[in-house]
Image 1: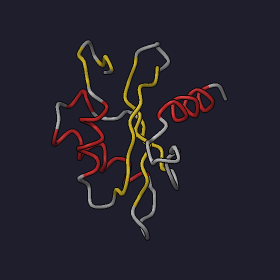
Image 2: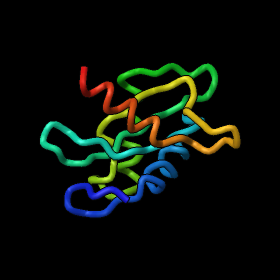
Image 3: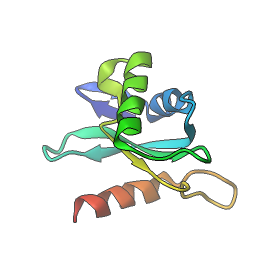
Image 4: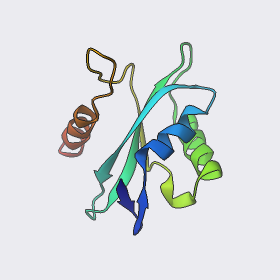
Length: 107
């Protein structure tokens, strides 16, 4: 569970709403601290074949979540990946996504 805007948010709830978008193949959500050390959701999205990542699609995905869930639950950042890191059995390795977020923010 993530505490966002003083309320608990399930990353799986955000993932489920993003997964209903017609351009999304897979998604994983992790908590990331912003510049004020507040935790916010960040989504890592794999698009369906033939789809292109863009700023417009990123905004459309945020609006999609806002239309399905409470507005404070939407992912503040969306990063498009070719594939999500997984174990040999296919489980998403969220710790690697958190490490990736930390590496990106330290640049």
